[in-house]
Image 1: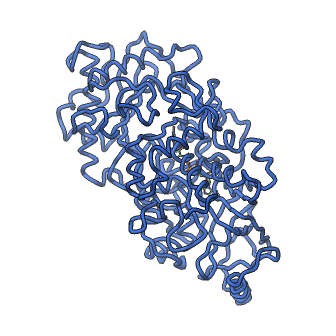
Image 2: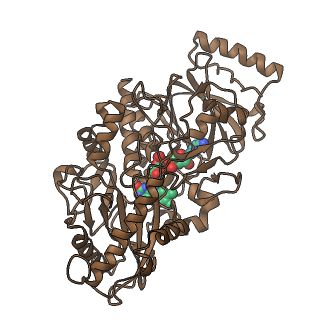
Image 3: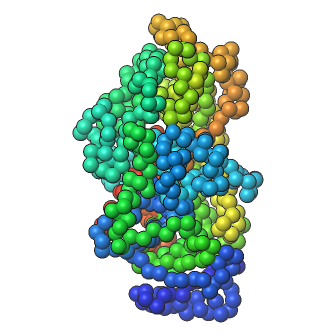
Amino acid sequence: MQRRRVPKPSNSGADGIVGVLVFISVAMLVAGIVMVVTHAPSSDIRAKDYDYIIVGGGASGSVVAERLSRSGRHSVLVIEAGPEIQDDENLVLLGSYTPTLARDFFNTFFWQTAQENVPDVPDWQYSDGRVLGGHSKVNDAVFDRGTDWMFDEWELITGDPIWATVNVLQAFRELETYDSPLSNPSRRGYTGPLHVWEQMTADLQEIPTDMATTFVQAVEQMTNLTRLDDYNDMFTASRLGPLLRWQFTAAPNRTRYSADVAILTPTVRARKNLQISKSSTATHVIFSGSKQAKAVRYLHNGKEDVAHAKKRIVLSAGINTPRILQQSGIGDVTTLTNANIPLIVNNSNVGYHMATHNGIEATFLKNNTHAQSLNLADIYEGGAFLPDPRVTPDPVSPRRVKLVAINRGSEMGLKVIDLQPTSTGYTRVFSNDPLRTVQASSNIFDESGDMDMMVKTVQRYVCGLHEEFNGYGHGPAIDDEYRLINPPLVICNNTGAIEDWIVANADVFSFQWSSMCRMGAVNDDSSVTNSRGSVWGVTGLTIADRCLFPRPHDGDVQAASYLVGKIIAEQIIAENF
Ligand SMILES: Cc1cc2nc3c(=O)[nH]c(=O)nc-3n(C[C@H](O)[C@H](O)[C@H](O)COP(=O)(O)OP(=O)(O)OC[C@H]3O[C@@H](n4cnc5c(N)ncnc54)[C@H](O)[C@@H]3O)c2cc1C
């Protein structure tokens, strides 16, 4: 099956390559060797020209669109698969915890990605937001920049100072307006588009809650780490410790500041040089004979459309960025051959090295005088960033484990998340039909070190918390009404039983997919792009989303998704690569 070439529109700037392309295209069309997209009769194709085309209007893509259209000198098209939703409370207010969204809206607002070996059976865990604003419209909205340790690694891996912590901090400051009092003002931004607010609690509860205060005391006693007042202070003396309040991309009335609201404001959308094509699903990037990205093919209202880019195409499609690359002929030769997709660039890293965060949830009975809220908006009541339990706690060690204390009525749920697993997964197409689901696997606990880490985490931090609550840890009882009920206490000293419990309960529920198209230095043969998102082996094609992260995020992904959009867009403006 041959790839269809699209005729150059009459109003596009002519160049020799395109002229050849037109000739080939016409010849192919005449010969009838076209790929038939069932939803898109060829007579419906309309051609359009833009300077920049951005695929995906999520966290990263919105920032790229705003930045590239700001000067008014360049025409910008955003192709977004989802609709725009402005008035559905479930998406606008944070109170709708994502599992509720998943239950009620999975088919509508989430991508359908399948697990390995079960093609076409959608799995919520391998999902992502499909709506203008992307995942920022349906996520838990925790705002976590990541630490200086993580960005130092990015700079080291890419060899590019644009990712140096000092630059990253400046970019974060420009992105945010910090709405809460507890911070070091020199590390926060106060004029950016993205509002960040501390804590998400029910209206009538005291902040911090009794549960959060008790939890933090127990973690301090257990680890000898002191409380973090602002876990997003990237130059803090300690990266580690418990915290009373999480920070969210939301207003105090719990209205989400999702990307469509915060970045694509009415003023931005009024720009004459910015067009947003909603409910439009990009299927392929089209290349010239010299492998320059020239156009994007997409489906809108069931019809095929093609938009041409005079300067650059930017992929910010999140979990679908590797899928679009693969459908367009950039990927592992075996994967593409099996899917009957003609090869343009053989790069076995496309869709691979997928990082995520593994997790489990433990349960404690809690003090019944502490608020019994079941208000889903209350879920986060404190947490902690902790080191690998196999090393002696030291405030400047990297973050390895995240704890999130959740108010579940008479119980306290404790999410226990491995932030830096070494196991990696993949997402790959198995068909040349761009509308079919892709296969994905996180290969959770593939590397034995990850299981050992999680077993030690349960022993040291979960069973350890029970000991601190009840007075047989490192000090007096913090509150002996807090008692571990799952996993059962009796397995705390039994490594094998804990391992079985983890296998039975493990999840990838933190949904922090990243790194499927890693950026790297010139000689990095595990990368898909250079340090500025430019895809190896072709020209005019940039990736700007979390797929670029060269290693797993050491917190939550959305803040760095905005950041990547901003930094890459500024490089595009400077044409500095
Ligand atoms: C349940 C859940 C909860 C989460 N909670 C948090 C949290 O609390 N904090 C946090 O930091 N992170 C959280 N995340 C992760 C975070 O929200 C996302 O990783 C982040 O928003 C990613 O931004 P992005 O721009 O890379 O992708 P997205 O925001 O997903 O944007 C990609 C956009 O591209 C569009 N698109 C995809 N394919 C195509 C196509 N073919 N054509 C056109 N458009 C396309 C999508 O519709 C989407 O709008 C959560 C994720 C999940 C699943």
